[in-house]
Length: 381
Image 1 (cartoon, rainbow, N blue to C red):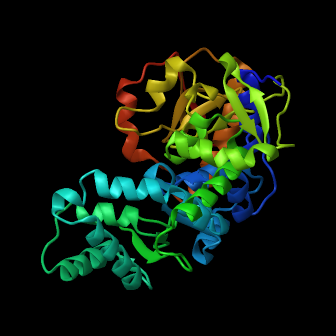
Image 2 (image 1 turned 90 degrees about the vertical axis):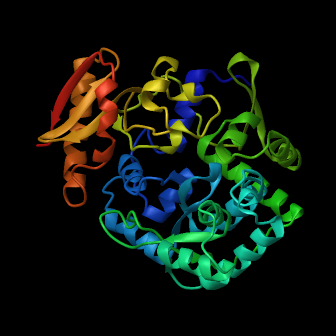
């Protein structure tokens, strides 16, 4: 069976709840979409606002507080929000990557610590973080543990490598700029190779449910694992997965009976969060980002701007301003599209009013250099 590039786009939108908003609880929605990028504290909330009917941010606050949803360093060694029941398998699946990065990128080795030293530090840190610990407390503990001020590279490497969850600390979005950490519960300290391999099979299936159909390269991109490991994980799953031929003859995998809607199904406009997962989960970013716009929305330092999604594809960017939402389109948009974006903007302004009306304001400097076909103020009332 063949599937076109537009067919892949519609499949992704359907699985990510972007063809129509659905009525789900926060934790169930996070599980449906597999993982939400969470480098910026507001983004998981805006991601769910785009996907759910009558979404109330307090429901995600409660899910974080109860650990039904957890925030941690996971895929691509970046912060994600995932369902609490998915955390262990996801963490074990990517542990070989975390170990390799921790031990080979110089954070530990250039500081004079050996691999054994790093493993021992992780074990002790997990014991120390049996209750919430601030970053300052953790760094003070590290200094005591090492008998002197550690190399500045040690703590960033350690916090990414250790099985630590972020602890909700403050509004407006549960997590502030000064994070606190707690050790993940019931987590084996290190996964052996067989455990990691089995966990990667779980991650592959979950990824396909939320982002498929997909290639080996797509899975490797999403999780930041070696393609060889992905191929090995797919072997025992072969009998349970469908194979498709994608654009340019690419071999794609998918779970049976997953949504693959018709290419001509309408895709409503959306005002997408910064770093929304749909922009980063595939090796081929053109699934949702036209090639000419990629460098406009994924900036030189890795920032992924809040975007206008029109007919399922990026067509511009947005930011809150006085009086509403400023929408910058990279191409001419019909009046009916502008009307749809304006309706979304009114809802977004109301959603942000009780939390952070000028969300993402610290990233406004990117707008100084953006080329545009048209910019409009979409009123908030």
